[in-house]
Image (cartoon, rainbow, N blue to C red; front, side, top):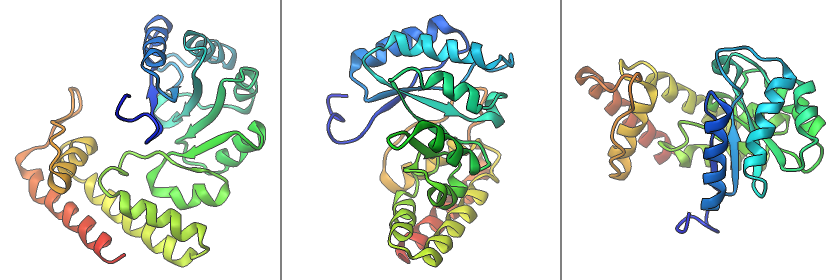
Length: 236
């Protein structure tokens, strides 16, 4: 945080599948001076809105001086952020936004409407960044941004300048690359780490089990993905 402070915004994800550990992580993140904390809802048990709100509220209370971002990713968490749950959370002034990774982009519009003018909603699915921006997202948080940031920044720039056709073209290129990255035996994030190593010379290691690391037969595909990224960026 000493290196990052004032240069980038750091949002620390602190959710565990029990409240006690989540609160400990939240308190630790605040002690380090992060800009905000974020949490998905509890997974496995499909809890009602009031229980999810209590879970998030307890986490936020453990870091009372730090802004809180709700992370909505129903396809993995098993439960979705509902308007009713968001209304409960908005009673806490530290709740400043949502990272929305649900596939319906209309959710972004719904959360923006409930949260008000200063409420921030980030688009989650990388494949629909332009759709999220069009319906009101302030920006995006995505897993593949690290391997091709130039491409995503250009999508945002093209959209903001009104060059919609260019933005759509770039989004299509990004989506083709993502599709190829997902075709390996290794997990997507193992592919991402290897491409970052190839492009930036930063060795981030592999992924933790149970996520599968790259297999030898994945390397030609990873190289192909890296070359697709280079070609897309060189054509900007």
